[in-house]
Each structure stands twice: as C-alpha cells, then as structure tokens.
Amino acid sequence: MTARHVVIIGNGPAANEAAISLRTQAPDARITIISKEPIRYYKPHLLPDLIAGKVSEQDLYVNPLEFYKENDIRLRLGQEVVHVSFATNEVVMEHKEVVRFDGLIIATGGKPRIPEPLQVFEDLMLSLKTLSDAKVWKERLRWVDSVLIVGGDLTSLSFTKAVLSLGKKVYFILHGDSFWPVRFNEELSSEVSQRLSDRGVEVISCRKILRLVMASEDSVEVETDGRKLRVGAIGAFFGLVPDVKFLARSGLAIERGIVVDEFLRTRFEGVYAAGDCAQVYHPKLRDYWVSIGYRNARNLGRVAALNLLGGQESAETAPAGIFQLDDISVNTSWWTEF
Image (tube, rainbow, N blue to C red):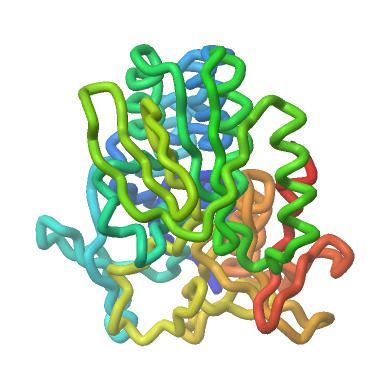
C-alpha cells in the first residue's frame, strides 16, 4: 500500500521497531504512536535488573523524546484507545477523539494473567510488567527479607535472580499453567525445580493455595494444601494474555492473541498485529505460534511495517526453535537459561 497515515497502537519493542522501519522505508508517511503508558519506550526485559540495582531507570529508556521529533513520528503518551472501527478506519480514544488511519499496526503486548482460582487473592499478589510495577517491587524489597514466587514464566526466573542478588530468601511454587504452551509434566517439573534449588531457592510442593492473608504491614501468611509460611511479598508470574480488550466486537479474530497469517496480516486490509499480542500462522508447521521476548517482538514489529508497505516477508521462525503443544506453539525456551 502507499502509506499515508499509519497508526501504531502500543509503545513497546514491536511498536517502536515498526515505527523506525516505516520511517526508513516510507519517508513521507505520517506515523503516530499511541500509548496508554505515560512514559516513553523502555526495555521491559531489564526491569529485573532495575530491581536488583544493576541498571538505573535512565538505562532502560531507548529513544529520547527528540528522536521522535527528528524522525517526524508523533508520539502520544498516556492516551488510551478504547475502540477501533475497521469499517471506517478509525481509532476511538478514551477522551472521545477519533483518529483516522490508512494503515494500522496493533502492538499492545500483553498484560499479566492471574488464573481464575487465584483471582480472589489478586490484591495480595504483585506482578512485573511495567516500570511502575518494578518501582513497587523495588520499594517493597527494601523492607522485606523473603519473597514467594508463584508461577514459572520467563519474567519469574529473571526476577528470581534479581531477588537472590539482593540477599533475600526466595520460595517458589511452580504452576504448570505458567509454562503454557510447553507441556508441564513430571520431567520438566523436576528439571526446573533442580535448577531453582541449585541457586538456593526453596521449591514448595503444592497443588493448591488455600489462603493468603496480610499478617502485618510487611508479611503475608500463606497456607497451601501442605504447608504454612510467612513471606514479605508474593509475586504472581503466570505469563501474559494479549492486551486487546478494546478490540472486543471489532471483528478481529482473537484467541491466544490477534490471529494473523505468516505475514502478520489480520482479516482487514492494511491492519497488522505484532509482538506478544499476535498469534502467528506458521506455514511449515501448519499451525500457530506466539512470540515471547524482547528480540522476537522487535523482529515482528519490523516485519509488520515492511509488509504493510507492500512487502511479503514471512514472520516464521525455524521449527526447531519452537515448542509445540496442541494447536499453539511458542518460540522460547526460557527455563533452560536459568
């Protein structure tokens, strides 16, 4: 297509890589990034390092605000999209403004998932997805000496390293759903448990968390089906769900993400999805896969931009690098790197 006004919803690695690729390939295009977070683009995978004190907040940021001005990319921070009309090619903002687009890239990433049986305890669990979350953890860890981590996703293991480096006691309850779509069986459980134990983490065997109660300002009482303990904080790390609630009833196919083909195209012309919010078809597997991680997100953002401009670059990755389960696959092996 001839790009006139391309709107990118999101401000993470996929969104920014898409914007840079668009500007390089289409110097005359209007480009707008819309982000509900009020701060500029940062590296989310470094948040555990921020908590550990290995990097400063300034080290997280990727591009200064001047970068967007110099590249004629309009950056709209702290503004939320609440609806998209594909019949009229319009993005509707929370404050009722309507923004028209000729091309659209949805790169909203994911948001933390809490399994339904644990949602009753959600107020007592901290997640780690945004810089704001990291600041809450950083402050909390100043006052507590132990943390219980429930889950087992990519972020949880990086976070565990950070907490251990601060000299805190770490308990870990492995939750099979956090490894989705990798099948969590006895062999995998044993291997991950051993890796954690080797680093000084106490792995708790647990089928069910029965009770979480705030015992004091700096401790939470935990009761499982086999044990009681007190910890300073509880982290919920069950992976992400696509942050696409605003697309409900929009006409897009959404399962574990926005369903796109190998070129990241949705069912609507000129509309693409990239990063953690996309569920991508892989022609060699004849199956779908979801992408996790900073590097993968950047690559998908680049591919979406090039294809929106008329390219035919496939987003597929090598089948050997993809875990497969039922009808969904994922190209990551995060637990082997702990």
